[in-house]
Image (cartoon, rainbow, N blue to C red; front, side, top):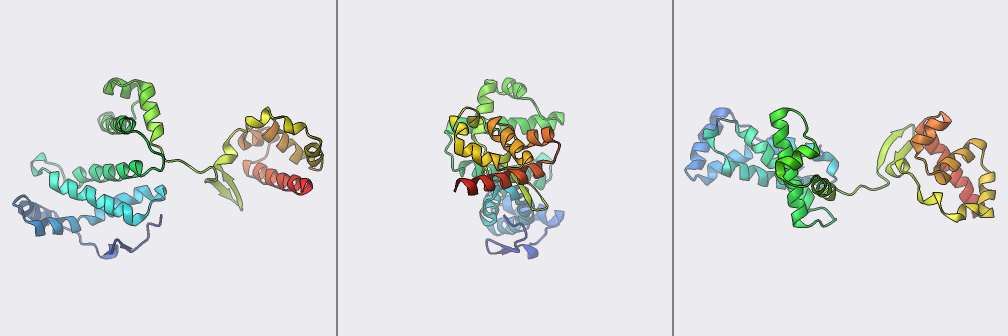
Length: 258
């Protein structure tokens, strides 16, 4: 998601207005009196706040226009519920509401459907965690959340896992000098430890065509089920070099096996 877009949802972000504290106070007096025009002016004067918040979600791969619209909904809710007698700045009140609105959208828009009860448990855990962090300046443990919410710890863990966005195995996690490492490169291949096809003569012949180091890497990766990081530590080279040699070895074997 590009965060350098000048026009979002038809709004030129480079020309967003900025209200002074005096203007905000004056507008809020009018808003409380039912002035819809003052409400619109106040919302437009705080769109920069929405813009700054959606940049936190740049890794979500969601359309920036959609996130901006959802953030604006959170902003409007904040305007409608803000109590000027609370003695806090509007931005202090609005930020968590905007973030919460965007997070709900991202969770509910997840391609994997999660039951309402599980989502509710996850939301309660997240909001409670944020509240506890504000009080103690540290992240609470699952056990502390469970005690606070009176919900079994395993239910909280399950709920939080259920609302996570799925990640592609081909998501890059590291890239240097043209050597890209993917999430799949970090996963142990336990299945291949047990399969009998590794004993086939044709495969053995293909492996025999590899260099000694390539042979060792294939042995460790596919016969012993080790991750690239574990292989790198054992053969005393970098993970990027393991990745490059592994891919070269697989191409050689594939070419031989036709």
